[in-house]
Length: 357
Image (cartoon, rainbow, N blue to C red; front, side, top):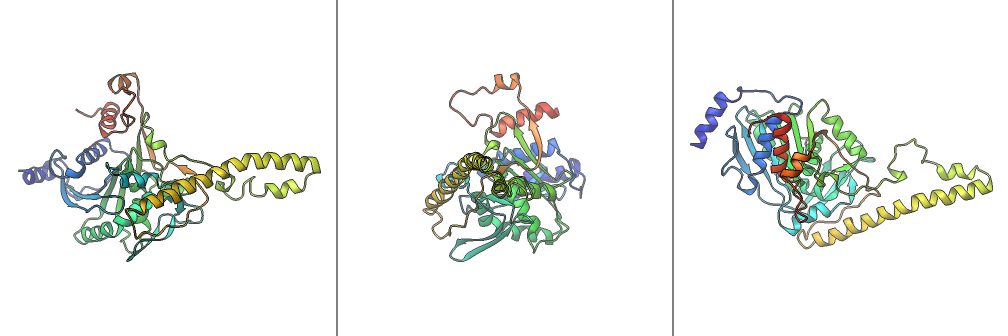
């Protein structure tokens, strides 16, 4: 019966060989978020009729998992699962030190994963935990993309909610810069309720490779998760040139008392942020790695950069809450994820885009 429904959807709902279109599509996002709600039971029931389950991956890394769907118009969907109720899955979120957007990570004794997530790795930094998650899933995803390409698929949607959305950012970058993938593949990306994946220069790169409406971050304005991880900006996070590149050199040119006062103020302003970055790197880098090592025993610790300047990326689609929403979805003082769940996102989506219930 389900197969029959899928065939009928192909004939009646969507045009055959339809092309992915740039721009936010509320109906498309609605269906993708409905797929996400299936969770580990993907394909079992309740998913939109136009989607057919092709593959469900094993759990790897920080209990990461991805699911491959085929839409009835020939578009494939790579759905990345979010955080689950396991300590190791949460550790991927807290493993929030930054690493360069290009490098090599020893995932286990037999796998040295080479990755590139931005053109300028000297300035672009990314979240280590979610990057490692991409690493553990990467070979499987690449193999399936190549297999589907050989069968004629040229269009993929990448979608994730919460942690899945953060990983989706980095996965989109990884696929763009992967040297062995055909260049005529079209990707569209929906990062729903996603935290910030990297620094400002990574965001610049992501927004460049997905420009003209090919990647979106969808945010419930009352959801705190997209505001994470905590971000710190130091003078080292600015572009060059900037007024901060040679402050000490310029102070040396000043008269004694001006130089003395200026040095005191400069040190006060920079010492606090620099100390905070070191603490973040120690706690969210070294500390979380030691905890992760209990599960990922063969993974080697990568070198972290001196930065914690997390930024959002992707074209924003903001689902603004109001009094009516607050009345329907009040915070009970306990459930801090009340505004983070797909149900609340779908409620606001239907309101703003006049979608049927």
